Image 1: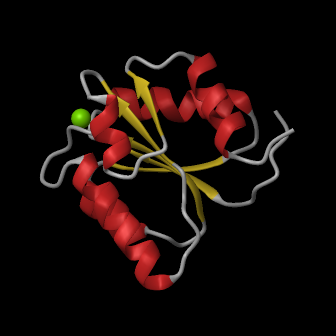
Image 2 (image 1 turned 135 degrees about the vertical axis):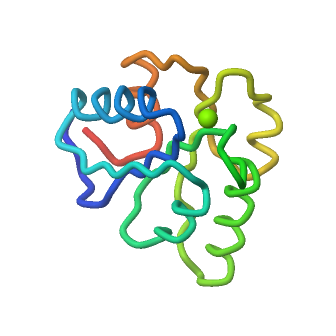
Length: 127
Ligand SMILES: [Mg+2]
C-alpha cells in the first residue's frame, strides 16, 4: 500500500497484546507512522498534532472510547480542525453507539489484517 500521508496513526488501546498486534498489522501494510497510548486521557492530550487516523478501543481504564470520541469531536469544533477518522476497536461494542459518539467505523476484535487494510484504504489517502 502506498501511503500519501506523513502523519501518525494513533492507537488507543489498554491491552498491550492488542496494541502490539495492531501496530504490527499496520506496519505490514506499509510505511505508516504509528503511536500507541493506553488511555483516552493520553489520546486527548496527544490530539490533534499531526494525527491522520485513530484506532480507538471502547473499554479503557478511566474515560472510555465513546466519551473520548465525543471530547475529540468537541476539540475539533473548537479549534476548527478537520475531522480525523476514528475507528472503534471493540470486542462487544454496539456499532450504533460508536457512530452516535462520532466514530466513523467499527472493527470487531481480534482484527484481521484485511480489516485494518480496508480501514486504511477507506479513510486514508492511499494508492
Ligand atoms: Mg480495552
